Image: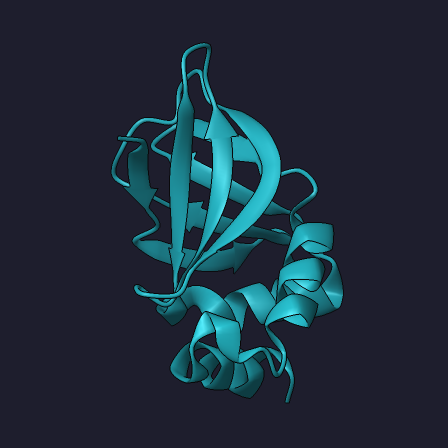
Amino acid sequence: MKKTITILNANITENKLMLETNESINGLVPGEQLLVDSDQYAFIYLMEDKDDYTYIVLPEQIWPLLKTAQAELIPIWVTFNEEQTVLSNFHDELEYVISNIKGNSNYGNELVTKVESIFLT
């Protein structure tokens, strides 16, 4: 099973969206891919280490800040204590995922409604 790290807090500081977690991200590099978890209403950013993938879980609660960062092209970082890594290719991936979800009931009507109400208004 893949390791998951959930984002607990998010804030925009110094023109960066900082996504805070309570687990180390040391040794992880951006996988530059965004997935969707329709059951948990979350986006998943892939990060890699030498052995496997780690899923960075972006829950619905932080989506309004993701929308702001997307609109203003603010870089998105994941952080744990002093460890920080930019999530490269995030904006392109988010744009692609949102356009794919729009009106697509394959993701489940509730997820589609949630995504459209936040990102497409």
